[in-house]
Length: 250
Ligand code: PEP
Image (cartoon, rainbow, N blue to C red):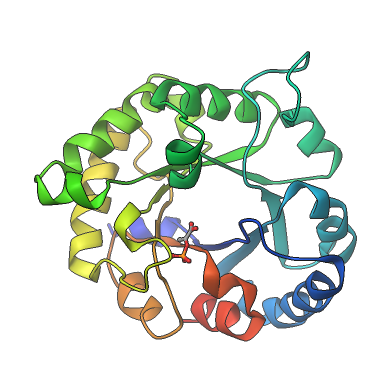
């Protein structure tokens, strides 16, 4: 049996720290208008900066596009200035939240354990965490890709089968993010297959594994043709509605 058939494609935009009320209004309206015909075979989603979650909700409610945030606190509440809790994301009807994006790991010193704690907090609030993993160029050059991914996944897998089966994994090689240099489909497939094998150890082989790193309309189809690539996490190209919709339709 082809188990891939149970995994509906998920294409998710990561706006990073981009946007503004006016530009977002057009982007969200264009996505809403274009997403309907894709809905049977692709789930479309956007992860906006926190201040725009209310706008995403008001413009996307009852549409084929879901929304989420780019980070979440590991804590439920308290004296954590600047942090945003999972229950606050629920107040804006988020479906998704990214955890462990490489920019957070690198610029905010997020450890593998913290990323897993964030995933746990998100799950406890009913959100679906998208756990980002990926190696740096140095790690790839040293032949350590799979070891790094395994290390990053370990505390997440330790959350147990039930928890893991409700999340999404995004493989994003750091050297491919924002560089215009995507992994080749074969390169990505090798890592995705290894991630799926790890997920299988906790009975979660059906979890969707997205690829991220310079995905564009002209390389999406070849990536999506790989048996273990279930969709994409898209940065720069998600800020242009037509390009993002063309990726989803690839
Ligand atoms: C990302 O930020 O998650 C990402 C994949 O960015 P880009 O598509 O711009 O490489």
